[in-house]
Length: 251
Picture 1 (spheres, helix red, strand yellow):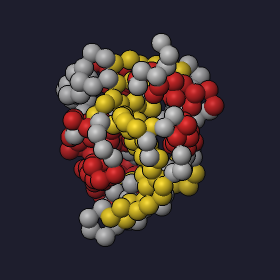
Picture 2 (picture 1 turned 90 degrees about the horizontal axis):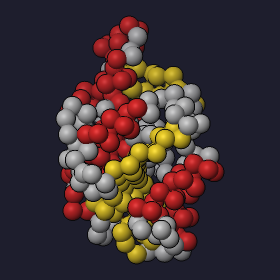
Picture 3 (picture 1 turned 180 degrees about the vertical axis):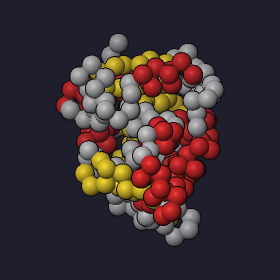
Picture 4 (picture 1 turned 90 degrees about the vertical axis):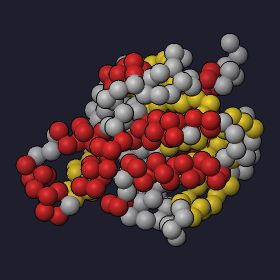
């Protein structure tokens, strides 16, 4: 099926870019990572996989990411979660499988609690709830000084140019922490995590699994997997996990 491309007004003139495959439900919604975009390998693989099976699929860029409007430095966890909710309500119908990568895993968990009637299931890929606390704990004196005086710090990245970490991102993130108590999600959840992930410890997926309210929770660890889990074998695992969650694995 042909993938539709479009832009959705956030409600204040900022346009959120999206790509959508029409099809049957439950649909699938991909939530990308911090400083990532909807053209990455996982999103593209899922789009092709769903299109081949006639299943609805939606991917989009948060504000300040990819093809969407707005500035990256102005984004916050709360703001990007609100955008995800806006996109889900406006562009999908019925229950959805949320697939969140890294920060997208945090947003997926928040979104699942905000709109439980629209949740058919959730897949986390190196899900990174509460990652702002880990950033803050590792701040150098120089980084703390930059945040205090300029409101932003340029964080080095192994994946490209340094990117800004804003004081507002950290402060807002503290208002959306999940790991301090039970996570009230009863729908099926699958968590995938590479054990060679240098960015998000794989033990975090075990912690998330333990805190989820539902019993239908499974964690898959990929011993030689990195943070992105975008190798061909990783993408195949992701698609198999989705099919099994939808009862389409032939088992």
